[in-house]
Image (cartoon, rainbow, N blue to C red; front, side):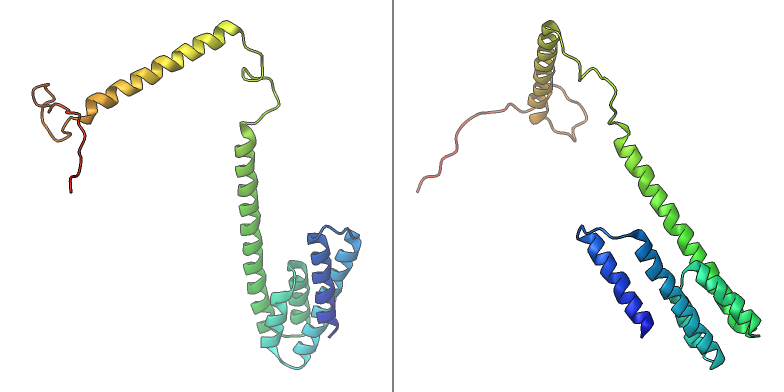
Length: 182
């Protein structure tokens, strides 16, 4: 019962944090510590009652440090099979923790790569341009637009499957209007 109260309190702190309320970090750390202590007490009771399956379920809820303490407790209370299972669980948890840390680092690296192009240094775009350069750039863009439109006209009537692209092979494009009469 105390464990579930502690979980409810911890969830309430998470809810407050999500909604913008502030609380002391020590309060949250105290709640987590209390949860782990209560889990260790329940694990000790389960060991005394020979409920190894229950011990494994409780160990799933524990942090890495608490699982290490549970392994020590099981080995000292002569439950070597349980200690072995708990150590396997600890290895799995350590692997999961390492995997999540690697994923977080990759996400941070990805964010750094996204922001790599955005620097606070002065660039040519941030500097005032001379009037002649602006006019030259405008002429260059007009010329490039004209060049892009010309190939489009030539490619419109060509057969892409033909072996040669002579002008005699290209059918003439006829303009006209199609009307429907009733």
